[in-house]
Length: 232
Image (cartoon, rainbow, N blue to C red):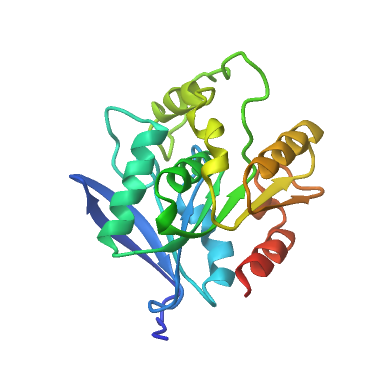
């Protein structure tokens, strides 16, 4: 495999007329793994995990639209982020790849796996569940301090959370799937169990003592099932 001197390279790419940034780690000739971050986060959130996963994979962590160094656009939606991922995979000539998504990135990953199953080798979802109640998610007030993302993303994505399309089509996900959740919420655990039973080839692992940001709060425990799932 071709190995880089620098562990992580920050790169820029044009996708459908918009500029996106991404972080490229690991061996350039290794199998590709694309990582999608949570709402309000960016690709850098995957750096510590990528340092380990990059021993076997080329880890490509994308700043999704409105986040980090990627384009601020007029409109934000899960569907547009799914299209961005498709353009990203096509631009990098990733015919088939492993996909890992956290929270918002997990919803994008679910939708992508349902829509383009032939492109996904394996799917890993971190701590995202279907709506727990019928009422829409509460939109927080915009903070006064500077942000590393476009605030418009927040109401746009939270407003979509209760749309049923991606949850109704979970049975269409056929590739091997791993769901990892933080074990601090029993309600979330029950919902994740329901999801794992809808996906035909799915394993669920709960990390006790971790909250929503599992790979930040307990990276070592997060990597145990991930490495087993990926045969690292």
